[in-house]
Image (cartoon, rainbow, N blue to C red; front, side, top):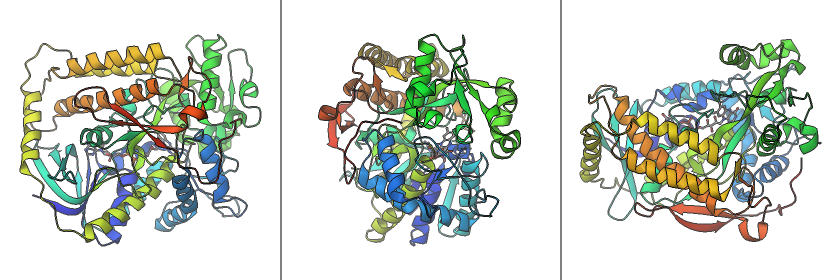
Amino acid sequence: MPAHDVLIIGAGLAGQRAALAAAEAGATVAIMSKVHPVRSHSNAAAGGINAALNPDDSWESHAFDTVKGSDYLGDQDAIEIMCREAPGEVLWLEHRGVTFHRNLEGKLGTRAFGGASAARTYYVADITGQALLHVLYEQLMKFHERIDRYEEWFVTALVQDDDGNCCGAVARDIRDGTMELFAAKSTIQASGGAGQCFKPTTNALICTGDGIAQSFRIGAPLMDMEMIQYHPTTLAGNGILITEGARGEGAHLYNAQGERFMEKYAPNKMELASRDVVSRSEQTEINEGRGFPDGTVALDITKVPRKRTLEALREIVNIGRDFAGVDITREPIRIRPGCHYIMGGVKTDVWGETDIPGLYAAGEVACVSVHGGNRLGANSLLDTLIFGRRSGEHAARRAAGMTMPAASEAALADERRMVAEIMGRSGGGRRISEIKDELGTMMNEKCAVFRTHEGLSEAHATIRRLKEEASVAAIDDRGTVFNQDVLGAIELGYMLDVAECIVVGAIERRESRGAQFRLDFPERNDGEWLKHINLSVNGGGAPKISYSPVTMTQWEPQERTY
Ligand SMILES: Cc1cc2nc3c(=O)[nH]c(=O)nc-3n(C[C@H](O)[C@H](O)[C@H](O)COP(=O)(O)OP(=O)(O)OC[C@H]3O[C@@H](n4cnc5c(N)ncnc54)[C@H](O)[C@@H]3O)c2cc1C
């Protein structure tokens, strides 16, 4: 049985940063990913990473913007840590070889992002995530003697010992179907987000909430699950993202009547208000009949000098041409709000520790909570790196003081049985892809920018039905080599668990805050709801609800205007 001090599930930015920190601290590490590491979803990150690095900026200003952006639901101790450590992290990346954009003076250049009171987003054109991921992967090679890479391995479940400590995971080698038990003193979930619960979404096909569901299933509470970010600028139909970097560079939003409508909703920040505010404004224009017939408004990037667009936004020039047939340097492109990011996730402290001893979480899978009700653009890459590193360091420290726990082979037998049961299903049920489509389309209708009790209750009933249908849905491929069919069936189970938690949290929060706007409770209600909603596994029933306080350090809630 492979055994390591630290097992990391996920090789995006959070996982790779955790692996480097744990290895530097002297631990033996296994890092595992269901796709090749540099195909992790962090690769898609475009616009940049925030840090108050300029002498005329301050971490306090970055922290306040983040607290305000979160609609005061973010935990201020965690936000302070993230913003204080951000400049050092960006410099660390640069020293490792990330070719951040430099201005004409040769200094690191910034662009403005939404909800920020200073231009503090550092970037590599509009391929920032890709640039970071490749540099971290190079660094992993340097530690090859201490870091074992399990590429294209799919974790199916976390494993606990008799005392409830997490002591590893079971995984399937996608190449040949072999299943293995991996023992570990510390296990870090860094398995990313869950955007595929919605259709369309900006998220890749691999973002199926695996780690959120796996942690939930062994008893780790989830937090802020109702907070789903709808990004203001996604293409209709396919959901592909047009980076906020476009508005950061000066693009404007117009309705079908040619009005620059953000003047009404956020007269000071305009297009660079926080994402929840811009998405709600767009959706209001569309719902009130001032959008285009295809349910969109227009993003006019021709306001940005063409030379600058071709230099700094070259990926979205390609996306506009290839996916919308539009030359964004010469004409506006139609966009609308689309599912983009999950602020909630596995509840952790500021060292990534969950409520299950030995289990950590970092990155989009986790909820520290630094994003609260609404994440500011370019704060997620930062979150993955800061809390990935901290989790790696802490997990290594924990491992240094203990012997290898006894991971029971029974867990492996259970997972083999689970796969055999899926493979053995006789045909007749609905197809996995059909159930997934119904889930995503329904979530995008009932659990999007505007929500109501009625719509959310219908969503919950649909999810319960889909769970029944998924439990008997047959697959076609019964082979062992690259069997994506069986993985699809397992992922569907994760997505349904995650979707149920999102909907139950959204029903419970009877107020409007951040990304959660309830038409039946349109006001923020600090008296009753300035608290986190936590969800825990409850047998096969709907998740159990509890609450935890929001940590305040120096910023009292205020009215939020932009
Ligand atoms: C289009 C787009 C653009 C974005 N742009 C920005 C930006 O400019 N700035 C910013 O701050 N944020 C941005 N974000 C958000 C940010 O990219 C993500 O939140 C962040 O990269 C998530 O990183 P992660 O390491 O947590 O997860 P990921 O990068 O998603 O990595 C997850 C890892 O887990 C592995 N995994 C998952 N399940 C399993 C399993 N069952 N078994 C084994 N391995 C598994 C995957 O293979 C992968 O290696 C953007 C998001 C999108 C969708």
